[in-house]
Length: 274
Image (cartoon, rainbow, N blue to C red):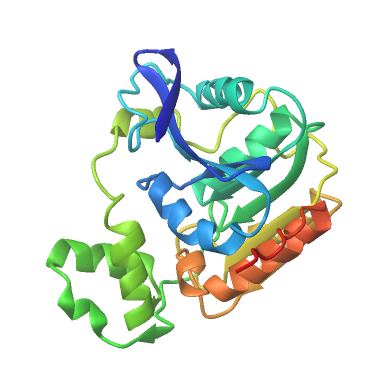
């Protein structure tokens, strides 16, 4: 069931809560919505006692209207309202894909003493992006089954084009790609500046950074240097994957998230008796 918190009628944050355990804020990227992250993340960690809070960033999905969200710190103010409601005390986790990764870092910078762990998947970083030239890792010509608009979306996002990734695109991406509030996107869904600078606030918690070597949207070289920002960082650059990394290499992402949760101390739930 969708829940909302708000600063005003024009500044809302919509989210779904799934599971029980330590809260995890899960953030999607620009031009997406919470359903994409839920689709790939739920199967990866549903055996853990983690309460997943899947958030629509302002200007996306059900977090509209959003004309009252005018700057990046407004987004963080809305997240603070969510934390007041869902996790007023204690520690929490934060995970983000793409621009959601940037906001995950910014949330951690606001609450460095409460964050138990950060997972960043193909995170967008402030400043000029150093991206590789567009390349295709594998093309089984499955996109011919799509209409022109969806084909352009698929081929612009996926560098591994197989029956499996096409099915994930149709299931996880197509339903969430739609209208966004462009004004909010330009003014608030950006890489800062934030009052608490993610590059200067120390966070002593396990951090996982995963990038795709063929990510022509945000790159991978600058993301590797996040290992210098976080003393407990694990940094992985995945070959044969791009910005759609969690859809293209789900087994790798699942294994790395499992290791991250182990390091934090989140156990695997006991198997249910049949």
